[in-house]
Image (tube, rainbow, N blue to C red; front, side):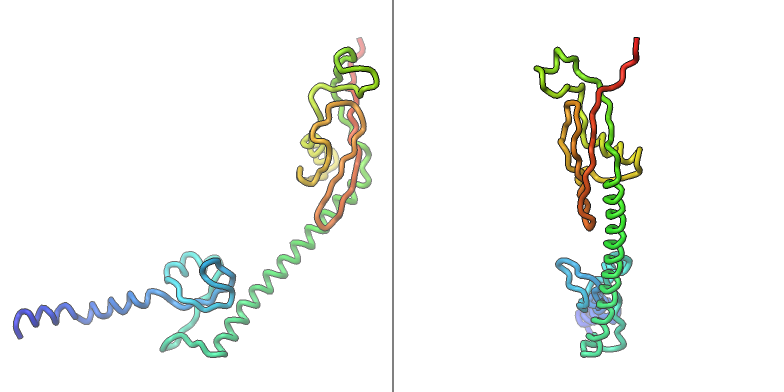
Length: 207
């Protein structure tokens, strides 16, 4: 065997062949448990990189390992049925969890609406602008500053224990004069209720 032939044989050593084989098998079959954009839909059996499965899909319960016992991936009807059952079970559990969340939210919002219907008018004291500076006769008495949603929401939370978001409250954005104003609260799964917000002159200390 000359030196050229020996060199050719050495380049085709068993170790290199095995390594090449390992590189080709760097992907493994997995079952998707949830829809993943640009990857696949729930129930599909696909090939993914081992590291992607180990660090991303499996910890987040997005996919499950497929057990392969010799030979290529089994794609028979029995295997497909088993995959479909696993995906359906997880989706069913997700559906139950969502129903429970919706039910809980509905009960909470219905309780808030019920309490709002029983509210007495909310009273806000504000310093008023002297009559000579606030406009002509017959006009509502102007106040310094304004009454805004944040003031009403804070009053509901601190005085009545009713917590709502700004988006749920419908009222004049900025109330700038003494008077009585209607506020409406709308909550999903519960409808709406209204209450009054009254702006009155702040009490002054007598001389």
